[in-house]
Length: 458
Image (cartoon, rainbow, N blue to C red; front, side, top):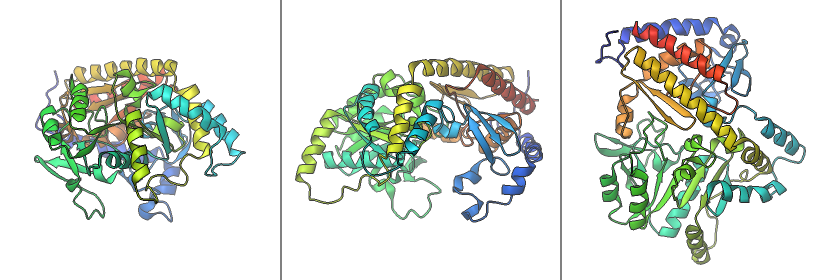
């Protein structure tokens, strides 16, 4: 049995982590001379040398410059092929350029890309959304951030209340009001926010996930318009709902006259109808972004019959003027074409059965490696979304998830996996199985993870 220093980072000595990081960074550079020459000192013309600032947050010495991606494989300009389990952090959860989506894009490209009017594909999309996700009324946006912003506006309009409630550690894109955290039990603006001059906690309440007593207390004043939540916390270290949590959440929100918004942007990994359909949740508002267009930027947000009726009444009495919802490029015909192909031909029961089967295999394989080397880690999963966490588990809430995060160790593992031909999400050890992912790719990931774990535990 290997001896693990449990006072170190994730049970691994800091010096060993630093050694792994250094040697793997050198191997990464050696394998990518063309990429280093082109982007090693940044890309000309871009602030910080990258088109989006988070591209510098990847643990690799410089960004991987992609030549192309297909199915569940990425190829960089140096010819290195990577089994892709990041999949654009869910944006390409259904694989890179699914054939049905690629055909729909080519077909629509010759007909115009945006014209602020619906196409015939829109006639099919509405009923598809009703059938797939259960709610009767829908709107189209371009990102889940937009969709969440618009849905929260509706919630405040129909309730006449200002406040919303979020769970510590939640992920809802870059919606301002959700950028709060609990630190030492005190609600504060999320650390690191750039240029935020407001106290976001004035209009946002925050409690720990799975804490039903705290939730009930926060709703007791009947001043919360909406609770916005993921069914599973997904963007830090994964936290699964405790038994009975979602039933209590729905009961307490209804008792308080508070609407419930379920954001499935990540948990759509659960099944074709998301966590909501599989587990019989009953949201008033529903949001899904990222993969719904098969890689084309698109999002959807829906509402119940009751919310739609109340919103209609609100609109009949409010003063005329712009609602503050909607962007010019939203509901464009390219989105409709891509979403229709995705919903009809890609997000199928058969595809999800394949994804779930391989995700279970990945979960078991990673767990076996962790057990083999007696590492104080664990694995969490929601459908086709799997995550290894460098701490003991399971985790109960966002506070525990934050403490479980081990950035230096996770960064070292990430680069080491890249050097072994595997790409996972860069910020929270997340891995996705797509319809295009193969059993051989899962086996290679398990083997690569085992090789890295052996080196860390040696």
